Amino acid sequence: MFDNKLLNNFSKHSFLLKELVKRDINGKYKDSTLGLFWSFLNPLLSMIVLTMVFSVLFSGMIENFPVYLLSGKLIFDLFANSTQGAMNSIKGNAEIIKKIYVPKYMFAIGIICSEFINFLISLLVLVLVMIVTQAPFHLSLIFAPIPIFFVLVLTTGVGLILATATTFFTDIKYLYGVLIMLLSFMTPLFYPIEIIPEQFLIAFKLNPLYSGVASFRDVILNGTFPQTGPLIFLIITSILSLIIGIIVFKKYQDKFVLNL
Picture 1 (cartoon, helix red, strand yellow):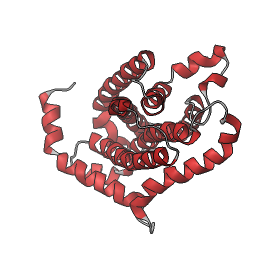
Picture 2: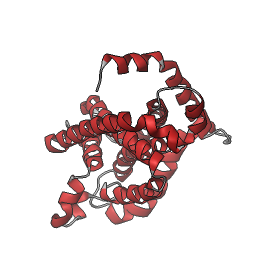
Picture 3: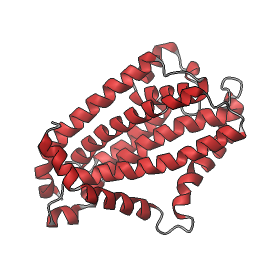
C-alpha cells in the first residue's frame, strides 16, 4: 500500500500539491475584502455568538466556556470542512482529470492541506482567547500535536473514501451534510458530556471525533496528557480509516473518468 512507486509518484507531483493548496486558499475568500483574515475572524465570531447563547446554560458546569467551546469547534471544523471539500474534489476538477494525467488523490489531499493551514491560522484565535480569559498555558501544550495529527489522519482517510464514493453516487454529498450535523451534536462542542444519560454514552464514545476533541481539551484545558482510552481509540480509528481510504481510492480511481 505504501510502496516506493506510490511515494515516488507523490514526490514527482509534489509541485501540483503546492499549486492546488495555493489555489484552494486563494479561492476560498477570493471575492472577500478581508481575504485570508476570515480564517482568523470566522472562529472568533462563531465563538462569541455561541458563548453568548450557551454559556448561560452551562456556565456552572464548564470552566472557561470560551476556551472549551473553541478548542472543540476548531478540531471539529478541521474534520468537517476538510472531508466536505475532499468529497467534491474529484467532481470539482473533472475538466483537469479528463484532459491530463495527474495523481487523482492530489485533489483531495490538496483540499485537506489547505483546510489544515486555515486550522493553524485559527489556532491563533484560541491562543488569543486563552490570554483574554486568563487561561493557564500548561506545559502539556507540547502534546497538542498528537491529537491534531491523528484527527488529520482520520480526516484524510474519510476524505479519500468520500471522494471515491461521491464520484459514483453524487447524492452522498447531501446525505453527508446531514451526517455532519448529527456528528456536531454527538461531539460535545458547546455542552458537557456529563449531561448525556449513561445509556447513550457509548454512542458518543464510539465517535472518533469525540475522542479527538476530548484528547485536545485534556491538553489545552486540563493540563494533562490525553486520557489513554480516548487517545488509543482515536489512533486506531484514524489509522484504519486511512488504510481503508487508500485501498478504496486506489481500487476505483481508474474508473473515475467514466463517471465525470
